[in-house]
Length: 81
Image (cartoon, rainbow, N blue to C red; front, side):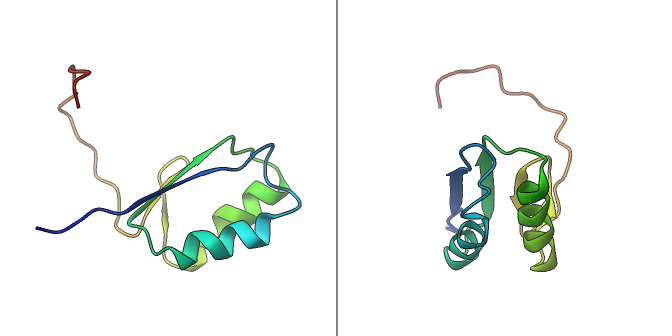
């Protein structure tokens, strides 16, 4: 069975001072999906997204994947995961 590796990162106020280190760390971990929290659409945030896109990541509104996103019409109604 294939494993799915998910990386999450709390950017904390947009990550201004450490944005280059954040990009490097996210790329280093080679996740299948990256989820960003506290992302801000400021200069640092734009740098982060453009850097990841240049490395082949697809932007899914701040969830990024090495594979293109597909729309799923089925919704999950259960809270028991």
